[in-house]
Image 1 (tube, rainbow over the protein chains, first blue to last red):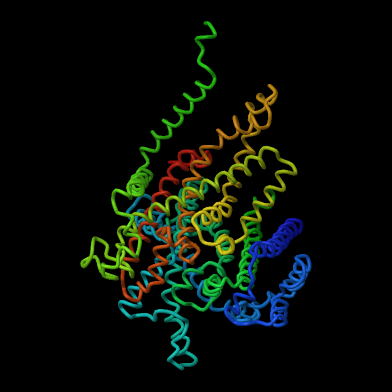
Image 2 (cartoon, one colour):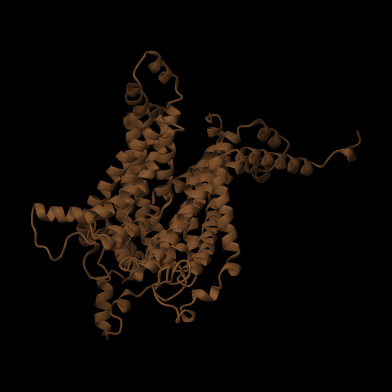
Length: 322
Length: 304
């Protein structure tokens, strides 16, 4: 991979990030709100208290001054204070990122692995009962709203059968530590993780299936068979590695959505991550929190898009020369 | 042969287009998943159009359902039971299909208009215009859709019109990329050069030569965009950004969740709207994949 290719891609990503930062400012200034008034609804505020709060939220001065201050603050990862809790947005985001990364990260990995395996099984046994079953199943899960699947799993397995807790990340009544706490968290994570895994795996299976079907038409597979290789070897050594290329790109791109991907599902299971934070900020609307989340979500997508591009070029030399 | 006996150019064009459409239909008819999807779509569209005949819209108002039991199961009330306010779930389901389909189609049309216009302009003009337009497209591709749509919807306020606009203006970039790539190969064709040599304007070339040739691709892409849009609408409505007085299937799910249907195990309130979304999304996807196989030049030779 040439240095020129890499620097071109990195510069492109930086330009995109700058665009998002600027866009983010104007997007949230379109709306005329008075957060100070809505935060202290019904309470008497003196003129000086009001001015003090306006200043605290960074809403004083002209649009130009506000923009410059916004750029300065964003560069130092200061996203202002929440209208609802008056806490620094950056602190809240940092605190809530871990549960989201754990939940959605696990689901992203599981769905990729299971989805790819299903896709391979369907393509290799094309037009058999296996293929029809896998394609029918994955097309169905792909067509479901993920939060609907979550509601059904919650109704059946948590409320109905009582096998799992109905929400949250730990049992507030339990004071277990160490392994017991981990077990409790795992139990809380099971249903949301299952929901997201089922919701994501369809895309991997569909992409892997069609990619492998394309690969199976290649001449070098006929050669591999003509050499007398066993079916499993033809599949695992010759067909699958090449067919994995688009899946690798898809995986990198989907990882970019790990932070923002589970807003509705986190809300269903009251999972205390960035998704639930988004859901709650929407009710205000708590604009600084939404603004900060939007920036973090976008930055994550841009970063993983860059990784996808570089990884793809590394794996497939044709991309570099094109 | 006298000139009067010749059919007009317009007539020739239209009869050729009719033949092309008939050919597509001939191929589509043999595509079984595609036909299955089409049958489901026709059934849902008929239900949406016939909603006033199937269920009285007065049943959507809580003030008219005060005599009904709340959260009555299907065995106690009607075919699909009632919600927390005693409203008939079946009535809501039938009328909800209208909103879900309306938003799905309207937002897709906006996305297709922007996507095709930008794609054709970028591909046709090339140079600096292309560089700028495709850079903007790239930007919109990487801005995560859901947070952007949420931010816009929160700023604009909840209404059907705003949901349509928000989804429409966030769903076009992938169409632009597809159309742009296709236009790049089309504008190299001899007939474009010939028409230009005869003095055709850019507008004439784009609307009479480029657009008709990318329209099959636009059609297939439209059918594949509708399901994505319907799922987006459901998610936005579920997050409280929908219009509660014009409830779509997504809004029904939000109402169900907010009213505690999960805790009460009121499955009759939860299952129908989600199943409706799933069937429509699946049907559009099947039709879209069939059209894509028939119409997309890159996929045409792969069919075996």
